[in-house]
Image (cartoon, rainbow, N blue to C red; front, side, top):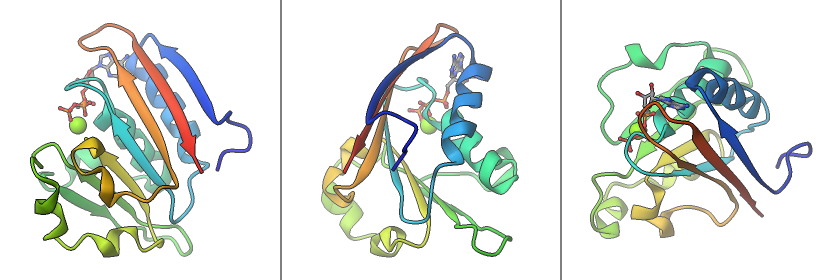
Length: 150
Ligand SMILES: Nc1ncnc2c1ncn2[C@@H]1O[C@H](COP(=O)(O)OP(=O)(O)OP(=O)(O)O)[C@@H](O)[C@H]1O
Ligand SMILES: [Mg+2]
C-alpha cells in the first residue's frame, strides 16, 4: 500500500505534534478500500492519530462531530475523495455483538476505514490491512509499530 513506507516500521514520537505530523503524512497515502487497524492501551494516541488523518484528508475538525461511541462516518464534500469510517470496538466484549450491527457496508471498499480496538473483533476485518500499534501513555513518548499486511 505504501511504496515509500517499508512494510513494517518502528518510530518514536516525543510529542503529540510529531505524532500528528506523521499521521498527516500517512493520511495522504490512503485510498478508498484501505483499512487501518489501531491497537494500544487506553490513552496511547489512537484517536489522536485518527483525528489527524481526518483533519488532513477532509479538513474538518473531528472534535466538533457528534459524540462518538461506536461508529462515525465522516463524509467528503469533494468528488473522488472517499469518506472516512471511524470505528471503535472498545466496548465490544463478544465479537457476535458486532456481527449483529451489520457493518458489512463499512468494508465495501468505498471508504477509508480506521478501527480502534480492532482486536475485540478481529474476524470482521479484511486480511489486507495496515496494523498500527502504539505504546506509551501520559505525556511520555509514543512508540509506533506499523505493519502492512498484504
Ligand atoms: N506523544 C504523544 N502522542 C500522542 N498523544 C499524546 C502524546 N503525548 C501526550 N498525548 C496525549 O495522550 C492522549 C491520547 O489520547 P487518545 O484519546 O488519542 O488515546 P486512545 O489511544 O484513543 O485511547 P482510548 O483507548 O481510550 O480510545 C491525548 O490526551 C494526547 O493529548
Ligand atoms: Mg480512542
